[in-house]
Length: 407
Image (cartoon, rainbow, N blue to C red; front, top):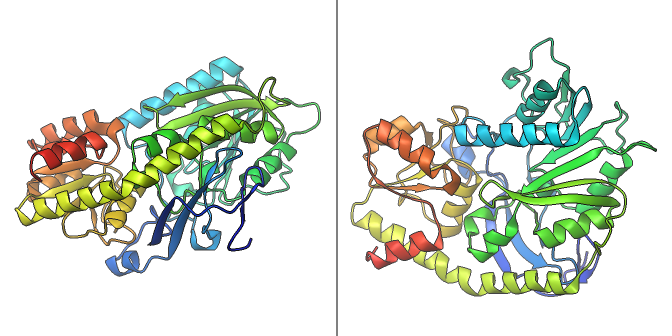
């Protein structure tokens, strides 16, 4: 790859345009558990330079270096401690079991994390499960000896030789893959002749990220960013028939369901649709810089005025929010309900992640809920602690409110 031409990892088109969004020296690992502040501050860093393919609409980080990202037992991506997320997972699993007749079948999950969703699918449909994930921790497994689930703590092999799957699941993994076309072709190659497994992928929906200028949803591990247009085109190009594409989790996710075969009526590259994504990316680039300045000013001014500020959610969104704004002490506390994150330190910023109960000691005036889908759950937890701070999720509306109040 030359400095002047970057091939699109989905369709291969050489792209010579300059990146529409740049960040330098961001943490390369957002959810690695750091047991000391020094390790958190010394985390590996990389650069973000987002390009938008004019042919297929894929957005990707031109400067991504996979060697910087660590996926191991210290990678803590689980959201299963939230009741809201647990309900979402149960409903999604039940829907897949019913819609696709997943009973007494073999299910392969690529990027299964701690195995929660695979275990759920197997329990609901009496299925056999095979999972792959380098961040899998056997001691965290909820599998009983009687259940038929095997999880390999490693990356999915290019030459998979296990049992032929009736269903292939891949949730929140494709956005971590730099060469998405090659990866999907490898998945396609695992399908034995004459088999027609249902294939289900879940990825973040990038359209609201760019429309709502959510810069805290852009971080190093996510090297590719999908919209409906680019996701459908990629699957069609890689030999899949797209059966369904739906938004989920308050428009945060896209869930695509497919089978091997050509998608009728789906063209791999639609210049008009791809052009709308490029326009969206350009609008994001034109306006997000001022948003970043406004957020920094709001938090710095409130801090100087004595406002006690906390972030709720010690994951990638918090890391991206804090490091993009280049702030530290302005946020006095970061809390998370996941006990595995508590007392670890945020990569890049060194904030210790606390249990929500520590907010009582802080007496927070402003709590920024990094994911709006958990607002009601967070409100209930705060009321249970006897606290009533202003609770907002970062958004354009929240920013305008804080600016209107004179910071």
